[in-house]
Amino acid sequence: MTATEKPNLAGLSLDKLRALFVEAGEKPFRAEQVMKWIHQRGVLNIDAMTDISKALREQLKQTTQISLPKVLQDYVSEDGSRKWIIEVASGSSVEMVFIPEAGRGTLCISSQAGCSLDCSFCATGKQGFNSNLSVAEIVGQLWWANHELGGFDGSAGRPVSNVVMMGMGEPLLNFENVMDSVNIMMEDNAYGLSKRKVTISTSGVVPAIDRMQDYTDASLAVSLHAPNDELRSQIMPINKKYPISELLRSVRGYMASLPDKRLPVIEYILIKGINDHREHARELAELLSTFSCKINLIPFNPIALSDFRRPSSSSIARFRQILQAAGFTVTVRTTRADDIGAACGQLVGKVEDHTRRSSRHKRRANAAQESAKVFDSTDNLAVAADRL
Ligand code: SF4
Image (spheres, rainbow, N blue to C red):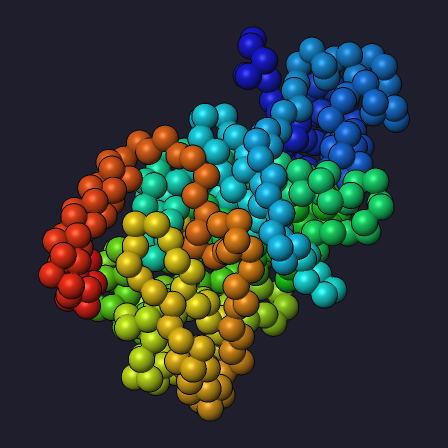
């Protein structure tokens, strides 16, 4: 058996750890002990797990491994946010972002290297897809954040209080690994995060939302970004497969399955001239008039290979006001960490694309640039912009 085939203790849920110990003829409570060492104390060295007998430690060293992804780079934003670039087993690198705020710290975690869904406003989607992250690679991001922020030695209390699966990738297209990961995040013997503070964000993979209730009771956010199918299909190709009515039906079902009363968050990226008109706000209010939710507006953050722009502050305020007047609780996400390329929609890492999408996007952008140069020479920049 090679090292890579050995079970990775850092990526096993409590149930799987228990099964591993029972199979080895050990008591199931060994699972709690190992889980606490790794995820509460930050210890990866089996020899240091002193409440486990020496013989069992030797056996674990022979038959298992503890392996986490490597941190390649660490950026600190002027606003105190952090971005780490992490290398995963496929050779790609992914990004995670920590956003400190008064009274809480939110970690935005990636679930895939790249993404196959190609939403038009998203830098990750333009890179194509490489691989799903393993459980250890997903939970490993929380482990690293705690390690870097003083969460294991108690020097910084609990620096990460909230986790959002809003980094690179569509979490529900890496279903089993994401479900195991959020369960470890919420497990009392591991990070013990509240189910209200662990949020899975999806672009709308309806069959997977339908399955979620059998695996987790984490919170849910939905990337809607348009008030009707025609516009949503233009900016989010997944809508052609799972239109808005099916999506809302599915989200309702999941929320109804939760034992406590919680609202899903509807995420809506505001893109200038695309989905930010007054009529869009009114249509959105009408669409959601019988759908209990909170709405989070996200002003678009500029990315390479896209000519989308952010609306003015007054358009954003107007959009919000229309929704509030219709009775919705509406927040506007403050842009954070854009100086280190870590704002919402900007995460890229380095993805060895297994699709042809990244080269296609680059070709289109180059062609648009060439076209713009021709128009520049005629001094007609406005017309050039329209052609981009
Ligand atoms: S927004 Fe999410 S689902 Fe869409 S391309 Fe980006 S990572 Fe994928």
